[in-house]
Length: 323
Image 1 (cartoon, rainbow, N blue to C red):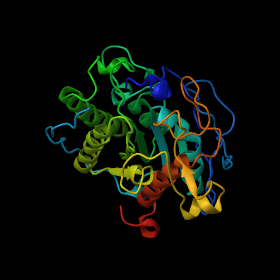
Image 2 (tube, rainbow, N blue to C red):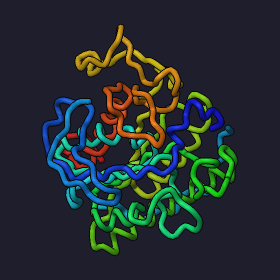
Image 3 (cartoon, rainbow, N blue to C red):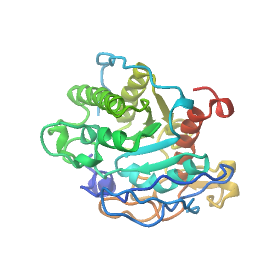
Image 4 (cartoon, one colour):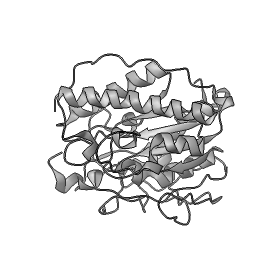
């Protein structure tokens, strides 16, 4: 997007984030932001059992994705979650990890600021913001997750070289994005098969309302929904919780019961964004490259609760609803 003074952290260059170890299980009754413990060198897993503390134009429809093999049933897969994505994933990674570990799931995050789907695809010619050991297939083969959560805003020209300067909002952009979603799904499935492990279920995070280009959210989310349906994967609709009651972008919204009881309200309102950053949800001042959010932020808590409910509903369908 051209308004870079607002959204530059979303498209920041390469930042290899601290790898987060598989966490221990605690109760899901109380939420809050997470702290995943000591840092590790890029590419290293930091093993930890600490639970953490609270802290353009809309596209026409392209060809439907080719259905892939059915993902395994939840009881047959390890309760491990791999989290991939861009700077929105970077800022939410600690709190999401804290919530997921409270359900009994183990967790590792490998987001990189400024990325998009093609950055995590193996074998793509040209430059990428993601190194080989962080590609989706490599991580699936080594970590053997039961679920892979994908958070991608839809970055394009000027921010990630793997998009080959394709302009955002064009039909070429949406066609390429849909093809990359299919390719990434297939590589994840192939990696699990070659490693002799069950195929992980993919959770596509549906993106929240976009203040500057509302049609972008509809186009990207349509691709995620169709890809999830074709491959029998899942979506987590965080957009319903990260906008106004009319479904449009909002800087502040009325507090829900959780926010009222956990000190996330101010005068009955929950702040989703900083006034100078309409895209991110961390209420702390952004830094170049992005970072895990260091302060309690209602938007990040809402995001984490929705994604956690989707993942836990898959792992525990008898208690959390159907898959």
